[in-house]
Amino acid sequence: MIDDTDYVDEYITETGLRWINFNKNDGKFYINGEYMKLRGTNRHETFPYIGRAAANRLQARDADIIKYEMGCNIVRCSHYPQDPEFLKRCDEIGLLVLEETPGWFNIGLSSWKDIVLDNIEEMIVRDRNHPSIIAWAVRINESIDDNNFYKNTNAKARSLDPTRPTTGSRFVANYLSAFYEDLFGYNDFTEGIKEPRVLPWLVTEYEGHKFPVKSFDNEDRLLENLLRHAKVQNEAQIRENVSGALGWCAFDYNTPLADSYSNNNIRYHGAFDMFRMPKHVAYFYLSQQSREHYGPVVYIANYWKENSPSTVTVASNCDEVELFINGISQGIKQPNLYTSLNHPLFEFKDIDYVAGEIRAEGRINGEVVASHVRHTPGQPVKLLLKADDYTLTADGSDMTSVTVTALDEYDQIVPLSNNSVEFQVTGAGTFLGESPFILEDGKGGFFVKTILNETGTITCKATSDRLIESSISISVVDMTEPIVPITDNGNGVIPEEGENIALNRFVSSDSEQSGNRVYYINDDSFDTRWCANDWEANHWCTIDLGDTYNIQGTEVTWEKSDTVYKYKVQVSSDKNNWITVVDKTDNNSSEQIQKDDFTSDNVRYVKITITGLEKNAWASIRDFKVFK
Image (cartoon, rainbow, N blue to C red):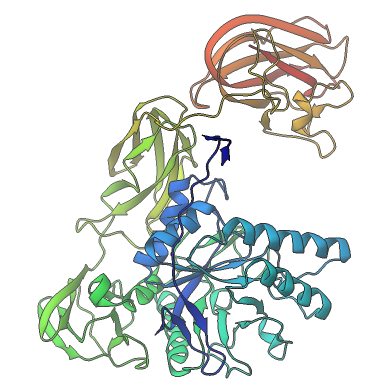
């Protein structure tokens, strides 16, 4: 932007050029004039412990997993627009994207429909410079027809971006649904692929909730899950007039629903678990990728235990596979299962179990190019910690995933091991997870997050009874990008000395009543209050000041006057290491407002704990202030 002769502002964005076409005559998808069968998955943008509040590198990492560890060429953002960092990474690596307006199943009244139109506009205006996006989903996922509404959503999308087709996903029962879009989207849970009734036609979901699989399920179920996905992809290849098929889904995810598709508020529908650790089915997808571009793949979908299936299934993109048991060949096979796939599966039937080693060698043009070796699993003997990233930035929000696995003497993850593991995180970062943690199928994880302007080392350690412990170090380096100046609640003013810096900051507690929520504790109003949901003492509230400050005191206003509340105030820079700055656990003052003066530097978190209560009094605070 230029004002007279001077530059006053600029905005830089990356984009790319490509030509796409969902052909209305043959149903195929073309990119830059070349035919491509779409083979993909769906992604819920959610992580354990942190939900959708994931750092940029975690968002980008998901794109890498879907492309390079699952072998997909497309992902559907279900069922909402997803983080720009995820889309940016899709642009960079060539992972195609179907982006979807928010919603699922239900359609509201006219004012609600107006919001959907606004959502579509926001989605397209924000993301239309992303070349990875090849279609806009402008229909509420799995909703019934609504002629006028969906004519309006399509018109809105086409007016904002006439270069991309519109689409929308129907539930399996809506096979005869009206076709308002440019691409018919269909969630096909028939365990196959129905013949398209219009073209172009894209299967936007299959399997998933039809056959949920936990990573710690028995082998037969894990294998059947792989075979179900392979069957649908095989049929997608047979039906040349189907543009492609996207399985449900990439990662297990949390859900508020308690139904037959869920356990422990988790839907186990993913090819990977919530910590992004693969199940058998992930390797089937990986085996479908081009070996010329991404290399050869060989994976034995069998743990080689006494009760493992006698049919050994191997996923590979090689020409042939030879199987060995304890060094003795069981024969060479060409691919023989679901033979319309790009790379069909290999089945070796009636293989007698003998404890020891099973090895599969993949050959191309008669030459061994890849292999996979398993041993009959032993008992877990050690833990292994592994971080996705070993260098983070001290920006206060950067984070990485850390996985823990229980390994046997062969350095294999031990299936079904459920050891209790304790984690310790120290240094220039904070721990996001739970400790102790019970391993699921020998696996688990947590996250570490940096602290603003605190460089150094984050040390992570995992321990468990009778297992060799594991530790790793993660470096935290200076942030070089400019920082937006700290402001007081968005007013554009840096807090002055003596000001209340807790006002309307994020606050959490261990307990609250439905009508007396924790966010009332720092709203500067005597008409509202926070209250715990029982009569007990030792309830607490923690305020996140949003940055580190040097503070000089606090002030608490109790619910009642003439009542003695015993309490303590603690401060922390990282929410792990706490310093007690006010100790009134023997308080005998009944003043309703009690101010405590002290000085403490480098404080971000302030916690007040009610340690003692009079009879018929509740842990309840009208206002709590923190002074700079």
